[in-house]
Image 1 (spheres, rainbow, N blue to C red):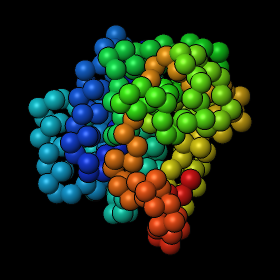
Image 2: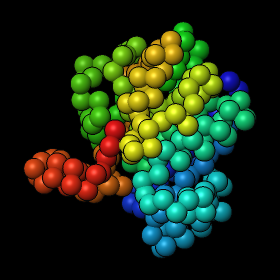
Image 3: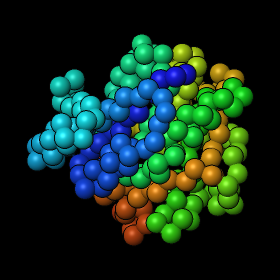
Image 4: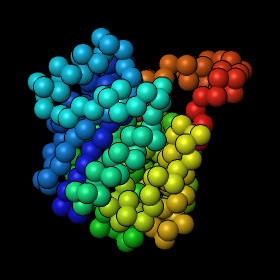
Amino acid sequence: MDKLHIITPVKDSIDLTMQTIKSVLDAELNIQFTYTVYNDFSTAENTLCLEEASKSLGFRLINLSDLTHHPSPNYLLVLQHAQREALTDNADLLIVESDVMVKKDTLQKLHEATKLPQCGIAASVTVDEQGSVNYPYQHFQDIGSQVLRTTKHCSFCCSLLTNDLLKAFSFEALDPSKNWYDVTISHEALKHGFHNYLFGNLPVWHRPHSSRPWKQLKYSNPLKYYWTKFTKGYDKI
């Protein structure tokens, strides 16, 4: 593909979100691309900040409140909308979540990874500020600078979904009762004959759950985390 659609779903956490957006806009890309930020019912104040930033920095902003009345999270709607647009434009789709910082060469090299055999998903490993592999890739602590073909799911923290995969599997078939879909789509890619690759040589800085502070309870108070998760129906994957 010679075109790339980059998206970032956003829910508040405006300071870190702006760092993510600026890191994407600072990326060095030698292909045609569009960058869309999906605002998933952030506060009025943060929505205004995003609207002002979209004008000054030059990214496209879609307020999901203009598309749906369904309460956040609306990741399914984001994925379905982004898939339709990428297919219409014959482009690959690259997801950079709002708690991630990419390097200048990350996006270009992930794009180049689509040349790997039967590539369905190309994902960057996530690291903390000190460069140690962190959530959700703790089970790849020894990856180093390797590029691994993996049958484990790829997180969508920073992942490219090839146009061929988008053509093969419609996101309209995803289960609307769930909140997150990286596990499902990773498995569907394998079912459709694609390979998923994890890039240890393209690490991105991940600040886990910055847009969902309640998930920090997973580390500080696991019992309260699981009680909140199941009683409120959060985080269905």
